[in-house]
Image 1 (tube, helix red, strand yellow):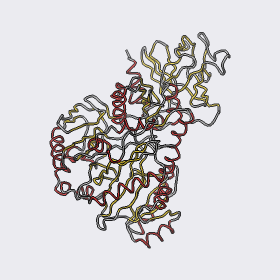
Image 2: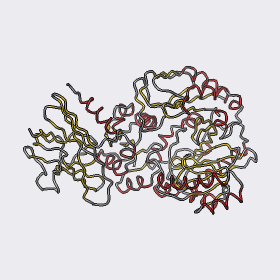
Image 3: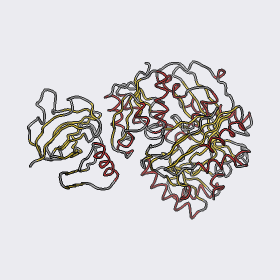
Image 4: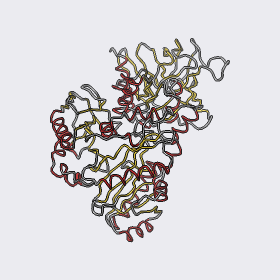
Length: 446
Length: 140
């Protein structure tokens, strides 16, 4: 069944991104907006807007019954969940299915499996993939026993976490005791699942992920990798593809491993398999699979020349991908920087407010994905992403040169941003050398 | 004091962000009464109560707004008379309509007292959060 009217259950730049593809494809659109977003750019672009609730996400964007009622009540035949919010929520996927509405993403049971990080680990192990040494722990004594065996530091992770959420580092036995108690309480409160597991901490790691796409006719391809090693507090700041200084052999192994995992869980639609690469040993480990469109998807789009949102709708409509692995051509190098409303003077805390000025440069090989303009209010309820700045060139140096120029030309006033940090970062010799690990940015800022 | 619809929305937005449960402002020629209620989480076929949001643009007129998005029903069941009609007198706990959210029937209470002068939403239609449903004139 071809998607004819799509309900967009998200906000901000990803809602704008989805609506633009729908306009190109001639798909009708309905946006579910909170009271805080009824005058947003997405609300202007959508053919119809329904107010789904008050600004706070728990009263609007996170309410499964409301999203289903809004999609059904407006005659939509599919729902695109974007990223974050309900994008990986099995309850939304199954409730929509029960109402005959297509969820643009994998089936509910796939979401449930991949969302349980312990089950996903078990599937990865059974499929022969390397995982970071670790296991579930139920008591502090059990946690100590694991850490004593593996050596400190260890990572304490929530089984219901993922995407950098629910991760804590314990450097010694004393910190493990406090971190364990806190992590348990937080996991139960944030994810409704108090189960924890411990992993050996890889000191010098790169975060590399592989984009996969699978249709309902048995075709599955990868669209190359992305390096997301430049992070702060487990959140990505810069992403690029291809990953710099990665041997062809390791690249091929990662892409093959991603397809192996996606096949093992009968994945459908587009998704991302995340790995960490131990820089000291050159070994890689499976981390998790994200069953949604990623924030950083544009870098992949620019090198493979595909519209990933259009691909999602095509797969959700039951149509074949229309190409095979051999047809995938990766061209050049792309880098994305996340421009955030953050106060650099105060430890980069979110800085909501009204944008008085918002000027993005127009350059060849440069793309901006944003929901902002002068006058836009950045509300305090949601994430602090203002814009994704994406540069594409024949090689990494060319893409970096475009990004450097663009970051110099960006003009934002009214809210504090991390622009200066991004400019410093892309000019840094260590970053330029492509030799960055996940702890580099925080150490460089300290 | 002249208030536009946008001013009222802005006030509601500020109250939404605050921890205030109920607010009553009365200055010359203008009164505003807002009461916040938690919206319901559905639990299969249960009868739930929800209190409407109320905006008071002035002149004793009060707009009863939908406390949630869902399907608006004026009566308990098809074929039954409407729960309220123009001319009826309401008390704050009067059930004035049903809003269905995924099979859960929410019984919406007026939240104000006064006389119904207009019904703004159509039976069986999807109503949005905050959509005006009834116009009520306050008791003198």
